[in-house]
Length: 230
Image 1: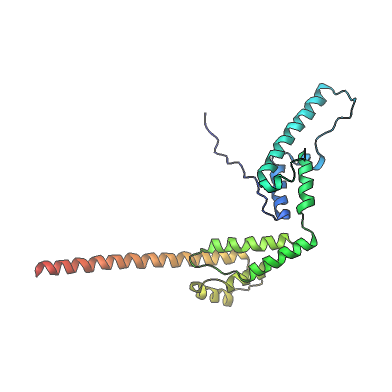
Image 2: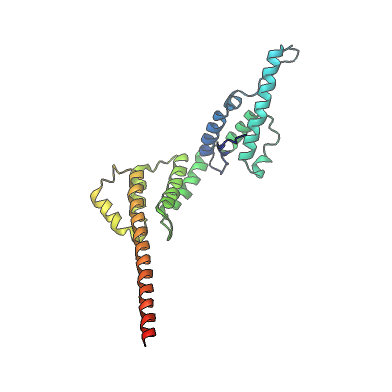
């Protein structure tokens, strides 16, 4: 039997940013065809109603799907949050409870934004950090700010990155600022330009190291040859 190479998508973990998590989790549950259980819940049967075999089978199928959907929600939440929803019986109950508890109120979002603005303000590329790593870190903060109601916009992120690169990028940063219109330069175009420059620098360092090693061996060989002659 040939094993499938298809990788199952990971369950989005709740990290405290409800709006962002809810968007990811909704998409995940939709991909599993469980979202209807969040919107409509499990069908309830009125007391005294006699079901047909088809109706009974449909309800049993929905109940099984609800258990599976609940399991995904349980995987997304940590133990402390789970303890607050243990009495919730259905997927819809859990979802509604999470929304009520964690969907950002104006005050909560304002507090989050203050912390994120400070984090964005002091953000700088670290020594040894790659271009792609720094862009990922910057965009993660910008996306969290957007989830809390403030969109930094393309130009602000581009300018922030250019101001906060390490000194080895000074030349290419100046070149970009002089030759590009920062109002139209996209984040991904900037990332591509800086990445290419980074690769060139890495290549030059490797060439220099290889040349130095080659020179060192030649020098050592000459010294050994002269020693033998003496």
